[in-house]
Amino acid sequence: MLAKLLEGKIVADKIKEKVKNSVLSLRQAPVLASILVGDNPSALAYVKIQAKVAQSLGITYKLYQLEQNISQDQLIDFVLKLNADTSVNGIIVQVPLPPDIDYMKICEFIQPNKDVEGMHPTNIGKVLFGKARIAACTANAVMELLDSIGLDLYGKEVVIVGHSEIVGKPLAMLLLEKFATVTVCHIATSKAGKLEDHVKRAEVLIVAVGQAGLIKGEWIKEGAVVVDVGINHLNDKIVGDIEFESAAKRAAYITPVPGGVGPLTVAILMRNLVEVAKAQQSTKS
Ligand code: NAD
Image (cartoon, rainbow, N blue to C red; front, top):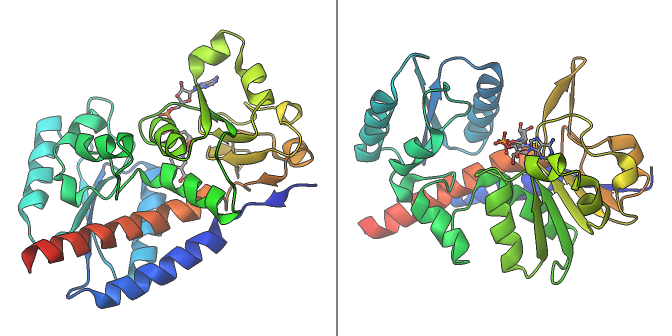
């Protein structure tokens, strides 16, 4: 392997240390309300990690586990209740939601100043204008990773694979803010047979699809910075979307999976919570 590992844990630990100190400076411990619908195993695993990290930082984590058959309107009512609860600083809705519930619709009802995931249209709009205090946690995690190696994104050819609302789209906006030249690929890019060509010219490659082995190691440009956001369960192992071994022979930096983006996402969620709690306290005083 030639590539250096881009490990999220190191960056996450630094963020968590700052969050811990910020929590101490608040009048009250901040409260994160977490809504989990049903018992999806990956959502349950994520909730466990969030609760553990929150506890270690002095943050109160309140989990609300709701029935799988809850209707969209009932879930919206639940969110409205948490909006009105002044003891709650931040609200997170765990995904995946049942198929008949529209995640983005639910996010519209989270009060923007309690939206710790940056998914309310107001907060998404602020990302577009380059004025975001709170941006999507995973997109932000990728930016922190790139920043941790002092990468100057100005004029860099950056290729993102995956155009979801939680990763690819907000990430494209954050990268444009740094004057990177951004290409966003998705399913239609693959269907048009053009994915390989785009990936091959990426100086920075970020992949968030959810398909093990989608990106072949030989497609990686020599010396590229490679971030694999994908999480796939393969033969009892967790792997990303990129063929790691062969990609690591060509890249300058590459994230391991697990241990790359994942640990940072949770740290940024907690940082966002402290940000909103601070803003709420300052409007009260
Ligand atoms: P999503 O399902 O919302 O979006 C998938 C994207 O991949 C879409 O843009 C789709 O067009 C594209 N796509 C699908 N097949 C493709 C193909 N063959 N070629 C090119 N593009 C293709 O996914 P998401 O919620 O953004 O998550 C993506 C992956 O990232 C998943 O594995 C998820 O588990 C992982 N993830 C990780 C973290 C983390 O903290 N590490 C956070 C969020 C998501």
